[in-house]
Length: 116
Length: 115
Image (spheres, one colour):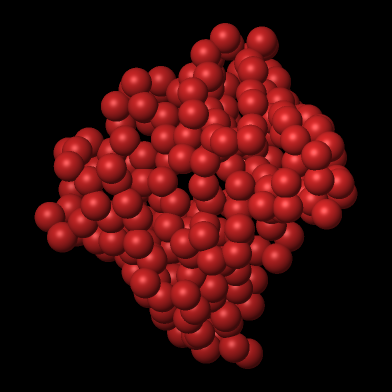
């Protein structure tokens, strides 16, 4: 069975600085998706970034980028120029690309604090 | 386009009561899921559906039932509420088979307190 591990329960970053959140996963599959979701205090789950495993290039979305290391099964999120609005829980998630499977596996989350 | 909607936002139940959490999406998505979120445990999948008339169990299905009679609606039924079911419940949907659009869209959540 697949697992997703976020080993940092909490992180802090100074405003305008850069922070990296870690995520590792375990799977025997070769084709899958990886996601980072943000959950602010409003509880709404917001997609930050997605990565398809067959793509070598790391995904980027404005200030958010990932470091996808397929062999190491690592999928870290880098937030550049951190802003106060980035403070939230961040969840890493995995989903098999097998069209017969529709199960997302979530990590336990990392709470990010942004210091003014 | 409302996206994924959930009702109610908050509910208090007594042990043994039953209730249905409603979820609807207006994006014509094939896939829908129910999760519960507990402190320190992330989101855990309860049940999911890959189309009308098709449902399957997730990681924590005990005590919950689902059905999917239409593409739009995916209600979650608590048969006999227990304090262990106190949680925040999220419904989510995704397009399904279109690979390049694979992303889950979440509802705002329902907070459930079982006394």
